Picture 1: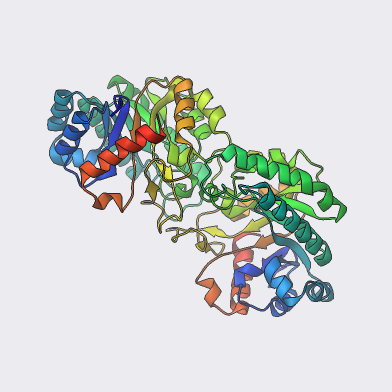
Picture 2: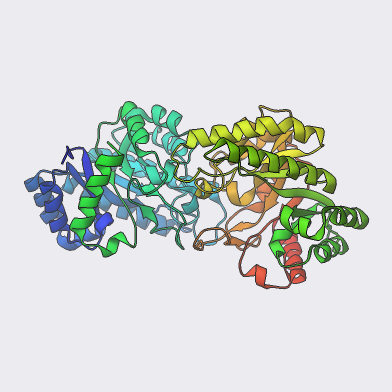
Length: 274
Length: 274
């Protein structure tokens, strides 16, 4: 099998696979990294996972997730900022390069989109220096506009870039996830403008019909309509030096044994992305 | 009931209601217009509908739909342009102000998004003078990015505006549908730039969770998270002088008697839009 050293496997792609097995298998397959989520890491133990990734020699390309900054009352927003501080600390302990921010949708019953976007900007302004001190980049993930009301009011690369640029690059960057941005008419212009602000790059594919709730319908690379190779080339041409991470939420894949999902992801990465 | 003279009812909102009854009820309720679809108009008879709307004194704010310009082979693209010419002629016979363009997604198996977008631009360039000669404005409808692969590769207001501006304003404009554009971080800037290029304005609401296939989950005004009043004000401030049309695809509403749906739409228009 060809070189997988610039490939990273996000654990949610095989969400029922115990993390120690997943990390070990990723390393044995020659992958350069893994992407992790807070809850399973906490269940296994942060320090245990930190020792394990160091022992097998993979980097943690991302820790998911911080964010969810939008809430109707100030006390709830304060709780979320506090939780994001803990997430930054966890990322630092894991040696993760980024903490991914899913910034939050509209508070329940609200129609104040501009207000929700201000809440996000305010929260990032408060957290950015803290992240920088911990050597962690806050990676703002612009999410597909179909999630604007319930997951993230940050809906385009341009919007994420303009927000990130208010802060030093070692504190705040942008996560480019193919699934969320492939449709954007300004995609390639924005990638060029992002340059080294790109703090992470994730791939999967866009397939239709979308399932109810539109959360678990992502496809393996090559099964959908995103030109992933051209996208990866543009991301790297703009100055991104990090790994390419696969992150797929798919109800069908979750039923498969983890090692099968990993093998499939590696094959499809080599066939459709590099 | 207050003034509904600037309100228009799109027939797909009550899709099982026979068109003559729908048009008559809209006029009796004091509405200024109706939005129509080609197939039910053809079933009833174009000239019969044309006579009816004139007799009861409502305007046809839009005819849906032209477009679907993207196809893998030239012959199929030619067929679609021919069909769009017929649609323009039908719009003219009805006295419709606009023909709505749902421009088409990626051809099956294609990942060439830029190529599909060129197909759309080429088709509009061919049709624009023909539309102008018939007194019909081609209204490019930027559709929500969740439809990019299968319904329209025109995904943002800015993209639609830049395309429309290549042609005279009496030939090509932009349809602003709240459902498709409410999330756009550049929304209000774009509305101002559109000015009188805005060829139509449609409302409904964004509700979650989205249903499988994401086609029939639109909400009545006021049931979701779009600030429709602010949006309408911005559209009108930019120079739009046309009517506000309600167009809702909702499986639950389709089961209700048409007159109930119309009454509900009128109440909610007055409560949440004007």
